[in-house]
Length: 498
Image (cartoon, rainbow, N blue to C red; front, side, top):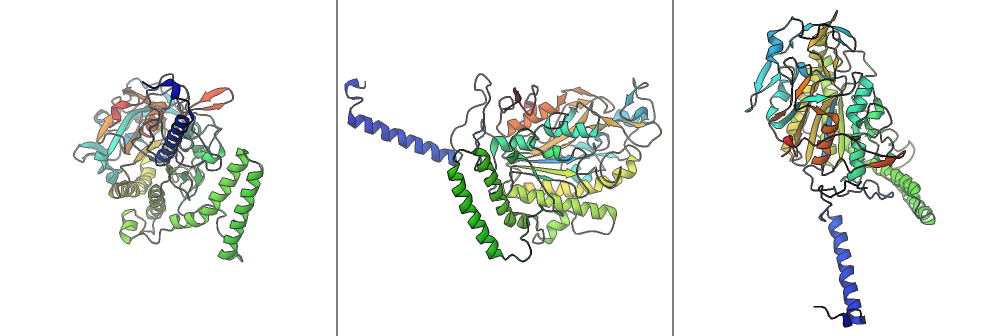
């Protein structure tokens, strides 16, 4: 028992103070090394957990709410709504009833009008890998990686329109102005990369998705968490040193600005907006060196360029595949360098016209997808294999998604499929998910989700969980509301977790 008479004498006071300061120092060191125990998911009350963001270093790495399975996310987004009927969702009954009316669909009117008869895929499905997963010949090389994938076959959306659909899949809301998943992730966790953006969006070389910058915008979160968009063909704008300025002059100028900014900030201590602005300028300066290095693919071995399909050109498919392949290599290099969230787009909206630039296969699906399939397949498969070979999949969650799916029928008067948010497929691979594994199912024709139905909210609740984040507690107070990526919905799909 402690003798209270001596507890507050001078000697004991100094002893306890020294011990306390030592504990504070130890906690600080453990926190910097990421070894300090974070708050557990089971904490009662579900009160918001605010990330402690230093305005002068907003991208500094931060601890998750609980132990994470993945540290980084690579999202592969197929703009235009890739058809699950022709890729991942095998339906023998659809093949059997090809050319017949869909039961219960005689009065069905979808996005572009009335529907015709059931139409099987032009591509055969084959058993893949040890699991025997049936995947279409449209994506044979991705099919061979079926044992690496965790399929969600009963995904549902809220809209059958491209722009709002892309918003919903990227932000959890159909309206503009909400933060993207990458912005939420970097707001919560910062980044492991010091000289690169925490969040990078890689648009297709043909243009942007229909929802454009909403797909990687910060919404009402601080602007520091917006995705930086560039690709392997068009790096970040305005980074090059102007003509007539030598490197030594540029270095001296930046050193002078750093001194002046530091002095200015000292005069306005506590001004977070000024600190954030200075931090963004300093990151931009560091990016003058890091971005050219990460986008320069000339030092990649010949076999890597060959694997990704970058070494061939001379036809539409080869040229498009080479461009997308370069973006896939860029995505791998960004993951290698610690970028927290990489969003890789396949397909665009703004250029090229329908059927050439994205997966919106309304009129001539076979003709259109015969281009899109080979462009997507080889580079994406090479990216997954490359990540695994380099040990990066152990800490990276790869997610594959699109704004919605496609109908099992052809539109009346056309040879293509209309929009379908009632049931479609996404998949995950890498850290934190079971593979090979399939969860949920659509009906016999891949029209409606009927078994273990999942929503985009569930999708992101699960991604957040794998990153060590409680989606119900990661919020931001905006306009009188505690806003979340999952709105007021969402449950973790625990059946798919390792």
